[in-house]
Figure 1 (cartoon, rainbow, N blue to C red):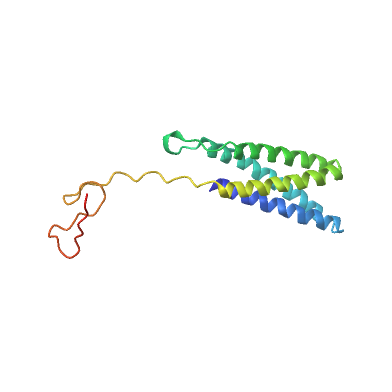
Figure 2 (spheres, helix red, strand yellow):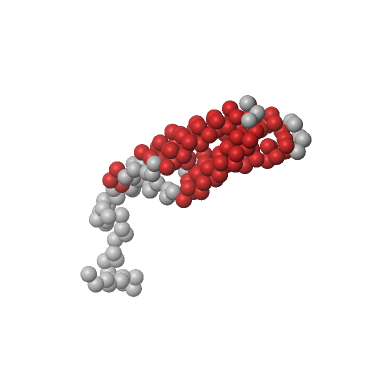
Length: 156
């Protein structure tokens, strides 16, 4: 669930970046500061996503099953892309900045889809059922003893 949350948040921030960049290019120069702040927030969220992706890889499922590698690799690549994106933005290398921005937002959206396609972790097994004087410890309700109307015969 944490991977889904961080992937969703980073995709939303990435899409907000496109809106803010377009607003700046349309002459709303105050959008440039919001574009910068959003980029910092995106980098921070991707820093949070790194250990989350490592936990997904670690797994912990049945028989020590591990999760896939791609969330961790994607988080590292996206974080590097945000760093490069910030550098090209501050250097005013607009051609590289815009191209890398398109690739970055595409990567964020692919990561979002991938995170939502991963199966959720299985819940841990329930503790052993408590044995009662009427039960056998299996957690099932006891069969009626009198074979009344509610009793169902099941052939073995």
